[in-house]
Length: 549
Image 1 (cartoon, rainbow, N blue to C red):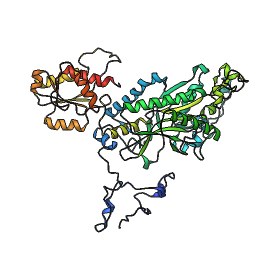
Image 2 (tube, rainbow, N blue to C red):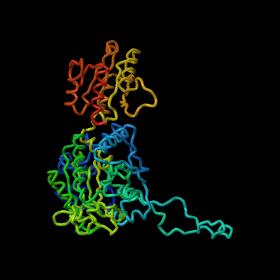
Image 3 (cartoon, rainbow, N blue to C red):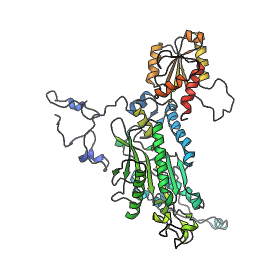
C-alpha cells in the first residue's frame, strides 16, 4: 500500500465502513482529514516525498486539548455503558457548580427566575411543539417498562362499585421523549396561570439535563456529548419588548465572556432553513430583521449563516474556536413566534392595543405592538406573546472544555477545583502540626458552628504530608494546576510564616495589585516565591474569591 499525496484524493477504504456514517455527513465535501492513527502511512513510504505530518492537519492531542487536560486533572470520566455522557468527579463537579453559581448571581439583575422542569414528556407534547416532526431523529424515544396488561371485562359486582370503564391505550400512547430542549416545558409553565400585559416580560431560567442522540462518531470529549446541561432561558414578552430583551441578552453575553477573559468570539446570524421550518416566510423575515437590528445597535459586524436557523425561528449565535481551530457555538439568542401559537399561549392585552380604531396608537393609528406585526387578538382581549430563547454559556460541558483550552488547563482561582495545596518538607511533628493548623485556617474550618451559614465561604485546601521529596511534590502540584502552592518546613513552623508559590494564578496583574495593598507585606522574590503570614494569604484568597463567587 502506497500513500497518494495530492491536494485531493478519493477515499476508497477507511477504518470503518462509510455506509455506517450518518447521512448528514458528506465525505465528498471533506476539506482535509485529521489523522488519528498514522500507522499505515509508514508502509512502503521510505522513498515518498510526503509532507511531514507535523505540517499537515493532524489531531494528535495537543498540550491544550481539553481531553488531555481533563485526564491529567481527573475532572471527568466516560464509560461505554453511557456513551457521550460525562461522569464528573468531585473536582469536575466543583467547576460545573461554580459556573452555575456565576450565572445565578447575574440572574436577578436581568430579571430571570430559575425553574425546574421534567426530563421526559409524552410524544403528544413533542408533536404539539413540532419537535416530533422536525427533531425526532436527534431525540431519545422511550416507552414505559410497565406493560399494559389486557384486562378482562369488569364483572357485575365491579360495575356496581362504579369503577371507571376499561380503556385500551391507543398505539403509541406510551411513547415518551427525553427532552433535547427546555422550551416546551417553559411554555407549559407560562400557560399554567392567567397572564396580563403588565406581567410581561416573564423570564425563566433552567439548568435541567438535556439529551440529544448524537451519532457515536461525532462524540468528542465535552464538546460533543449526548447528555449535557444548558443555561437555558426563555423570555415571554410583548412585541414592543423584543428588541430591548435581545439587547439585554447580548449585554449579559458580553459581560460574561469578558469576566472569563474570552475575547476571540464573534456573533453569527442564522436565517431560515430551506425546507424544515414552521411558520410563514413573512414571519421569518420580520424575525430576522429584529435580530439584525439588534446586532447593528450593538455595533457588531454581522456574519450570516444562511439556512442554519432553528426550525422555529432565526438566531444569533456566539462562536468560539477550540484548540484545533474548530468553531463551537456557546451563547445563543433565538426569536420564536411559533411555539406560543402551538401552545395557545396568551395574555390579557392592554386597553390601548384592543382599540380597533388605533386612536391610542402612533401617528398612523397603530400601536408599537401592531407595528411589529406579531399581535393577534381573538376578540376577547387576549394576545399572543413572543418567545425568546437564550443561553449564555450554551452547553456548560462545552464551555468548560473551551475554558480549559483557552487557559491551557489553568483556572481562575475562584473556579479552580484545586485552588491551594500545602506541602510539608518533612515529617517533623512540629512541621506537621503547623501545616494542619494552616490548612484549617485557610479553609475557614478552624472554628465553625453547625449548621454553617450559606454566606460562609469554604476554600478547599489540600495537604500533602507524604514521604516524597519536596521537589517532586511541587512538580505534581503544578501538573494538577493548583493556583497556590504553600511549602512548610522547620523554619516556617518556628517563625510562623508560609513560603508561597502563586505562579498558578491566571490574572497576575490583579494579584500584584492586591499584594501591593497588603498590610505589612514586603516583597520577597517573585510571585513564585513569596513569604506571607497565614492571615495575609487568607486576605489574598478572599479578594480573589470575592470577584465572581
